[in-house]
Amino acid sequence: MNPDDHVCVCFRVSLRKLRNYLEREKPPVASCLSECLGAGTGCQWCVPFLRRLHEQFERGEEPNLETSPEEYVARRSEYRQRLRERAAPDAPPSADGDGIT
Image (tube, rainbow, N blue to C red; front, side, top):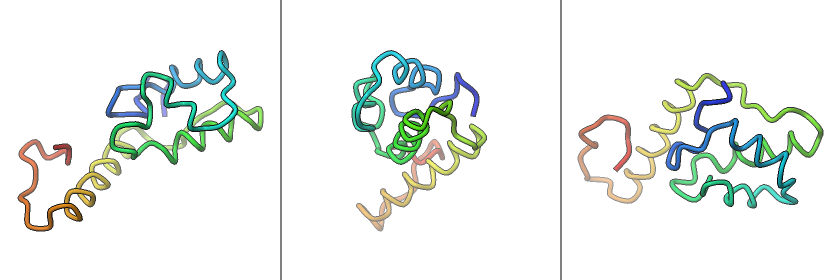
């Protein structure tokens, strides 16, 4: 993933912003990353990825996600579709096709 790609798609929080936040604030737990522009507080898709970034930082590694931005967003769309199907199994798919309502 490139530094300017969004880890938190809901609030458009980039990997670069998260890295800078980690370096500056040195949060003791991953959940503190929500203080970085609300990361992880929308659809919750990015929460496991935020945890991974925090773990990497704690180990002294450069936080990074080994996925392409296209794959990441596609997987998020699938996740959102599954959530919608569980909430309303008979609802029609969204018109924009990205799985976001």
